Image 1 (cartoon, rainbow, N blue to C red):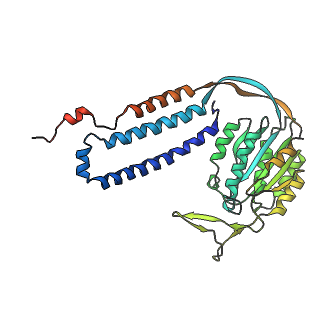
Image 2: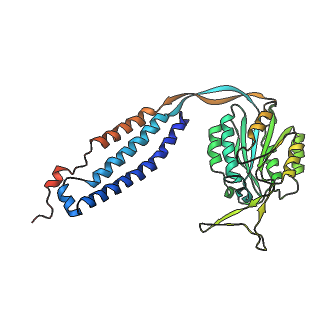
Image 3: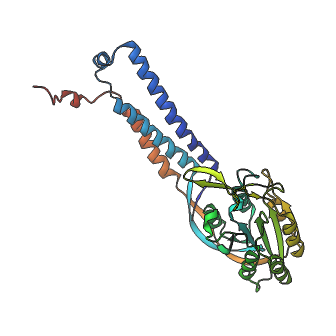
Length: 342
């Protein structure tokens, strides 16, 4: 198992592009300053030992060294001790709508990306609940079977997009049915489904599916992604953005169907939350889920990690030392070689 102890330190890697831009700006300024001082052939005579290649090489080594310093401070770790620990929690499945309408931008940056961002934050707050992820559009698919491996959940979540399901549409019923089949009813823990969608259901049996799930003791929560006024659905073609149109050439507006989502959550003894660009609503639902019956179970987790920062800092030391030791002057042995001397 691999993890990074101080992930916030990795943000300093974003300074590297700024350093590169600054390097080329300084390089350009130095070149112009030399041109104002003397013509190029005269500068070669005035500075015969200066090496532009070594100047770039020194900077390259510095950047590499800096990157490894940041990685070292972040402290990558490798799990070294796997133990069986007892946990207590519920079974939770998130059904995420990945239909094309989830690309609408009435919630920034768009409905789907905002939902994924909120789910990433949710994963940081979960501690002992068993989690599964289902994606659905015209059909529903299990993206992640129910597990306590939140690291795997984060990786799977990064791959989610509208093209992950081949059949378009919004089949909420199929998502509820698949979630119901995925639960382990031999466990006595509480079970809940969180449906994250804009509610534009294209099938008629979502209510029936919710009723069947509720009969088995499954609570259903719904999060509405979008606004009642709606927004057009972006379409990227040949690198250019346009908006989806109907058969008559009119722009299609995707609107939030709150009535459907309220009815589903009511049937499932859960709650409905409308998302916004600021907050999606997982916090409210988690608070409500805290009262559900929990079950104790065993789970394999890494309880000890070995630091690997020393390897990264060692490499950083080598490159930073090279960036200091390398001179900007040409090598003397190269100066002695006269390839074109008659």
